[in-house]
Image 1 (cartoon, rainbow, N blue to C red):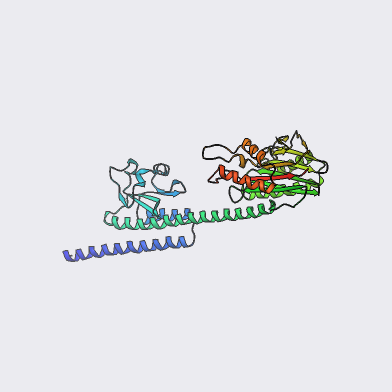
Image 2 (cartoon, rainbow, N blue to C red):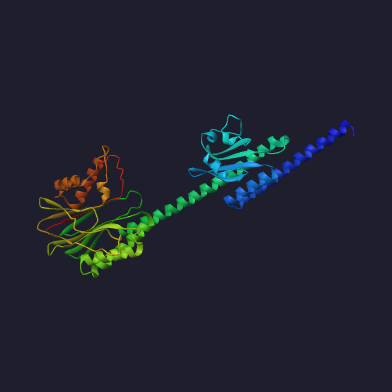
Length: 413
């Protein structure tokens, strides 16, 4: 065989080998693309990636490290300790913006590899492939170029899966909040009846779209009614459903229970039965009889309401522990106020007293007392508007750390 013929044969073999490699690469790319279109799981794509590199590209050492929310995770490897590489992500890898050939000056744990392939998505790093022992040096450049392509395709597909899953979760949470908000809007009174004997007005400012605060007004007769306020632990649909169940039981017990003590005891039993102490609530309820001129109440661990009568302002503290924490409340003390003069009641949740200004001072009980003393002669709705102005002046940025609910009741004796 002449030298020319031998050279032609070698060139033919080289071209055939190169053609075979290109055909293999195209086939592999099509296979992975089809798998992505078929919505193959992330684990399935990682296995395909590993198999392709190991069996078809001849890669003997590999670690694929992927961003998972705020953490990095080694999701696939060949002859590499996965736990080592996911712990090693730091400045050593994050500085690589493009394909990097590893040198002795790089981090020690990278020395067993040949190259680092970074993958970016929307200018942010989402994966790093550490590749070593690629075999035939003649095809090393072509192999690395194609491995880079496959790595980018797989990593971006996985990132898109993660973002899609995140979007679905956000949409689910949005629907949950909308549902909870609808339930809550049906439960919390938006207006109150007009009477010559009393006035009612409210403020409701949820921290998010859905809050855990609840208040209600339940008429019994023209001269008798019940008012209440509660702060339910938790947010979202679970809290809204508990609120709905609580309101239904409260309204039923208002007409069937013999007294407030029995009512509170049965409310507690019902909440505990449903939640098994997983959720609980603070609660204040007052039964007002304007004909008998008496107010009876029970405070179940709630922020004490203020009662302004004449020149005196008192806290309505008597009661018991919170609702739903125990299967039975052992001791309940019922409070009583004889209504001798025009009276203003201000019921509120702890979101009001948690309000803080720029100096770190709280809108505390003493400040609310001073406000009520100054404005107790106002009509209920005017008093609430003035209270909102006071809150705005106190906290200029109107950042509420928690839900704020206020129910003001004016009794004309």
